[in-house]
Image (cartoon, rainbow over all chains, first blue to last red; front, top):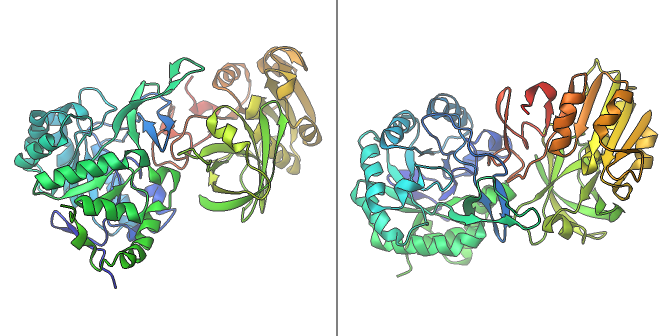
Length: 301
Length: 242
C-alpha cells in the first residue's frame, strides 16, 4: 500500500491534489459531478470583502496549450462565502478547505481574512491576481508590498497562512523570502502570467480588458522552475501550481520541491482530471518505486 | 454533465462554412437549447456547440467555421472518436400556456431552434420560424424546418433569399403568444425591443469551462450575476439588461 498523504503547514492532507482557486468555484457545481472526498483539499474561489462582478466579457481567450483569463475576482463577497458557500461545501466535502483571500488595501485583506479564516483550515493569501487594478498583484510584485500584506493579515489570521505569488516579477525568490520573513507559513506558486491575444480580423484584443492571466500546460516548466528555486531558498512548504495535468506532473512538481500540488486550468477542459490524477498516482508511484509520496519532496539538489 | 467518447457518423458542409456533425454513442435525450463541449485536436479549450437534433444514442451539432477550433472540427471523418461533455446549460422551457410559438434565428443561432421546433410540434403547439442570414448560401435546414413548422419566413441581408433586410422587420407579419430566439447579440437586442410577448433568448459568449466553475462567461441580469454556460444559455426576456 503506497502512502499519498502529505503534511501542509501542520494540516494533514490524504493526498497532495488540490483544485486551484478560480478553477473550481466554491465546489458546489463539482459536488454534483463526482465525490469531492477523493481530493486532498480544495482552494476555493478568490474572495474579496465586498462582492464583485468582475471584468467585462470576453474574459477568456484560447492560447497554445493554455488560456488567458481576465475574470477579475468575481465573487459574492466574504460574508456570503463564509456563511453560505463554505458551509454548503462542508456538507459534501470532509477534507481540509483552503480559503483564498484577496483585497485592494491592507484593511481590505484583513477584513476579508477575519471572516474567512475561522471557516477554513488554511488561508491562501492572493497577492498575485493580474486582473484587478490597485490590488492583488500590485502588492505581490515588490518584497515590501508582499511583506506588508503578510504582516497585516498575520495579526488577524490564526490559521496556517500560505501566500500565492505572482510569476510576473524579476526574481520570485526575493518576494518569497520577504513573505517568509513577514510570517507566512507557506507559499503557493505560481499565479498566472500576464498575457495578451489579438483578433487580427477584428483588429481588437480578444479580451475586453486587453490583457489577462496565462495558464495551462504551457506554463508548467516555468512554475516548476520557480517551485524549485523558492523551495531551495526558503524553509516553509511550497504548493506547486501551474499547468499540472497528470499524476506524472504531480510527481515532478514534488521532486522540484512542492509539498502539495494544485491543478488549475485542466479542470476547465477536463472536469474529471483531479479524481483521475488521484486514481493514477499509486500506479505511477509503484512504477517509480515510491512508497511514500512525501519522501520525494525536493529530492532534486 | 457527463463525459463521453462519441463516434463520428458523418461531418458534412450543409451551407457555406456551416457543417453538420452527427455523433453516436452512449447519449441520453438532450434538452433543446442545451449544448455540447467538443474536444478539438490542437486546441486547449473545448468548443461549445448547441444541440441541433437529439435522440437517445445520437446527437447532431450544426456549427459554423469561425476560427481555428471550428476549422479543425471540419476535418473529422466517419469513425473518428471525439470526447464530449454533454448535458450542459439549461435549455429552452416549453410553457404550458404557449399555443403559438415564434422561433427567431439569426445565422448559426438558428441551429438550436430545430430541436425546439420538433418538441413544440410534438406538443401540438403551432410554430412560425423567422430566420435571418447574411446570404442565401448560409441558409441550412430549410427543408427540415419546413416539415416541423407551420410557417417559415426568411430574411437575408443581401436580399438573395426571402425578405431583404432584418428578421425584426418580419415580426409584424407573425402571430404568436411566446417567442424563442437565438442569434448574434445585436439581433437579440433589436428584437428584444420589437417583440410584443414574453419569451426566451439564448446567448453565447467565449467560455472557459462550460459548466459553471470558471466565471468566464458571466452576465449581469435583473436577478444578479449569472453564468451563460450554467444558468443559461437561455434566459427569459425580463432577466436580460440591454
